[in-house]
Length: 476
Image (cartoon, rainbow, N blue to C red; front, side, top):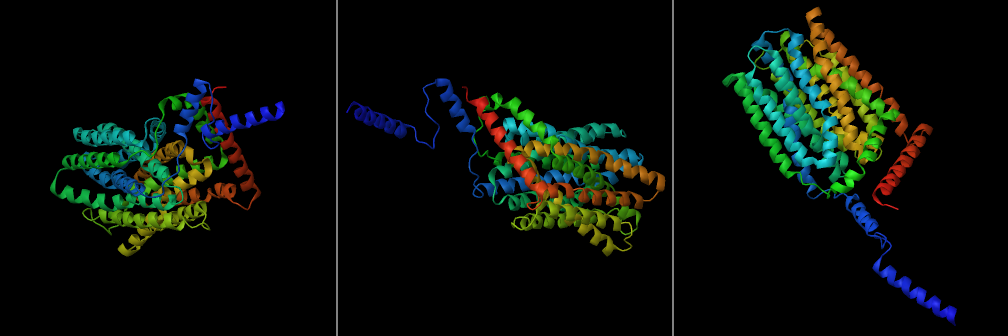
């Protein structure tokens, strides 16, 4: 009887514990330090993504930010023509202005990513907008000295645009999962609209105002638009500062570990080669159109508008196509990269306005894969939680390629006195960038032995990371 009585009492106590500590919630503990740690772990646990609702407002804000950020960076070809006429320097020295702007914009992603992780998307975007507008506005102080433009327009303006860029991508991925490729495709389509609108607007303003006044107007647009976009970017989850500080060293070590991944390193080389070739087109396409006699200086901005509108369409369609389960994002990205290289190779051979416009349209459509598909590829290779830091590392390689592209092409022109060889180099680089993506495609293929082994390794790494975070946050 005593045994039966003790057994019944034990069952009753167990029932009371289960009523106060359900199995699906955090386990009960009498240790205050463990209880606090468990509470912190629960607060930073990822929430389910809404895949809609206010997320579409986030997509709209990201879209507007892309319009401004890339509207400025894609207009370096227009600014290159303006600065050539104003400063009367060599094409190589002048091309550094636009190339350094893109290089700084991409390279500052390494700075932006950890800032986004620590402070969130909104404050980083707002800070980048202020810095970019200040750099563009201060460029009016340049008087026959290109180095002033290097410091203001290129360095300060480029870093500001780069700080603002990473949050526009990360915030969309925080709100979407099932519809991520569609949402990102819509958001980054602002790149195409910016490339379509900004060049002719700058040309039209140049007909009325001086180049200094035009820069002040552009700086005002950058500041106003990015401020509104930052205000709309409401964070989706609460950030726990103490928990982040406890796990920061572990997180930093894990982030650096992605550079050991063969497919991710291949993606880095792809971005270096692609941006090397891409910047050549954007910096020198206007000059090619003018030197060929097909366009005048007044309407040379039209060719950039054609690239921009085809890029806008391409970004939306790339996102929609890759939303279907049977479509392989990396394979679509690879084919589009090669297609943009072929279109670039044909540009110098275009002997009519229609031919050059067709090449520009194909180039704009195919090159849209870089912005539309890259976030999803990063997530497939290194995971959703490492999107920000992965993008930051990629932007470092993009910055290196962007910095070299314009000046190398300008140097080729100074020696050859024609732009043909610059565009041949660009086309070869773009095609090579697409072909190297065979390696990540093999690693992510569901059929091959390499792909299965890589996915098993990824699952093991995610499990180890989760255990490490648990051990850091929950004292034993």
